[in-house]
Image 1: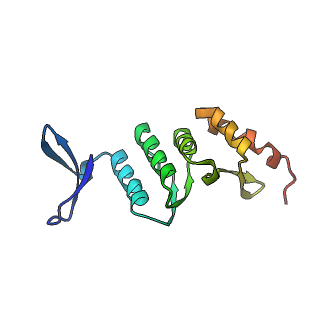
Image 2: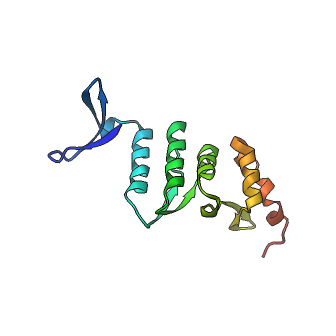
Amino acid sequence: QRLAVDPHEPSLSVAWELEGVLQLLPYELASDTLRRFIFHLAAVESNKGAIITMEEPEAHAFPTYTKLLAERIALDKSNQYFITTHNPYFLLSLAEKTPARDLAIYITYLHGRETRAKLLSEDELADLMDLASAVFFNLDRFLKDVLEAPGP
């Protein structure tokens, strides 16, 4: 599938070829998943040397698109990303494809009345990967040392 732009019309279409005939679907009629995927992919592909923030880019997306977007981000060498997610498939796809030297995963948690963030070590990152899809059900494993420490 491709995004089609008609310079004579103020609209976008999703385009694909079927049996040698170009098919067009108005962008507004495309699924939410496809529209969100196009939006996030445009952010990845149209920026170079940028800092890009995304809040749950996998939200309301079919798993295939979640994995594909995570992998495109992971393989992008020209931008820096700050991403929040609650989706293990997005997180694991991103972590598997991103070179370790380019990856920092933080777990946010509430300590007293403060939101804090803990950077995972290389060993903790390996443990996180072993948890697979159960990662978000086991975040307490990574927070024992900080939750037991006295607060301010």
